[in-house]
Length: 498
Image 1: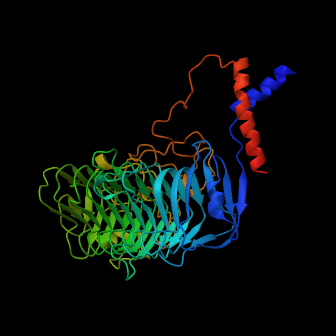
Image 2: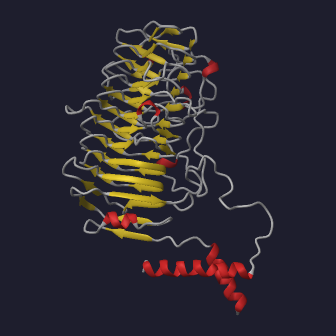
Image 3: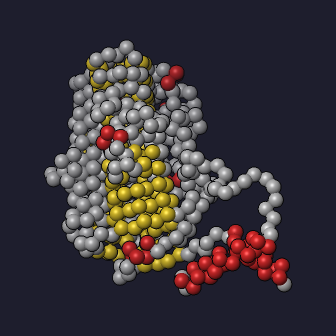
């Protein structure tokens, strides 16, 4: 009898805390319920409007890699949190290992402001009609690590108006190793907007992957990245489509790989590499993009280091296909095709594409014509692993964002979410946000499964804290005695949550 009781105590001492699922509706104190969540808990919110008054709505939650905290909409529901004015943000968040899914946010100053964040997932949400930035992670001194911003719709901002403001000026805080995938960001160009970037990743941020996003109708660049300031790996911008960008479509200062993107038109250059804050163009790789632009498809200014421009399809309404000034001694430009001049550009016409124009918006079909100027005309040294739709290129140097072997585009360009095939990470729900970060051989690198099979690991993940190697984990009577406080705590938790 005594040995059975000791065994029960030992089981209690090694079992994780009990995770529970809670529900809430518009009439409940949702803020209090969120703040009461503990690792593994899930809060399911019912459909309806959740109006917020002038007081601050904030929470501070810490889950674990194996037991994240989940705040989500009920199936088929759209819980909508909104503020009537800009006196507060909609939500202010401090969180680690938390997942926010299927919610809508409008009004307020910012929609979601992260004062602190590590390994947080924001998926399938809508943020709109904010008085300022929709989604911000820019508190000084923070490093926002492993964030996942997946398949959200962000639109109709005001004020400075960025869809996503990620990191700080002058390396004052950083976004690191994030995945920004499958979002639809649009209409950050309203009359009240002073800036209005679609996705802005500030100086010092590094190792981020921005892919499969649809971005259009912005006032400033659709995608803007600065230099990494030596903090880590380059950022990767791939497989996005954009049009109606009020400034340059993509602007990068340094430290980025930009590949397999479609750009239909911009107020500035299609892709601009130029000095910004402390960064100057260097450590840049621009490959297999298809860019149509009334002005310059690609512009390079003030380069100070290595820049590779290869296998891009570049069509202009009167500019040069590749404009470059300053020192170009470290520029490698090969395998590009376009109707304008520039280093490393071969002649081609816009008819090389199935259905294309310089009108600057869909409908378009930018797939290459078989036997045209893009068919196998690139430089094999710079062929990447996949194309705009994620199809393998198999080493064939087709110019532009598509591989001809695919037979045609997998998704018709248009407003809304990009429809991409999904390769689920084992143990995940198989949804679009779980797509592996890249195909083998891509320098984007995969998002490796964590302990739960579907989340990003800690950078230093290995054995868990307190874990050891081999050897006996045998219990003693002292171990049994030490289990009493834990058993009491578990009992108290059970009583609290009934």
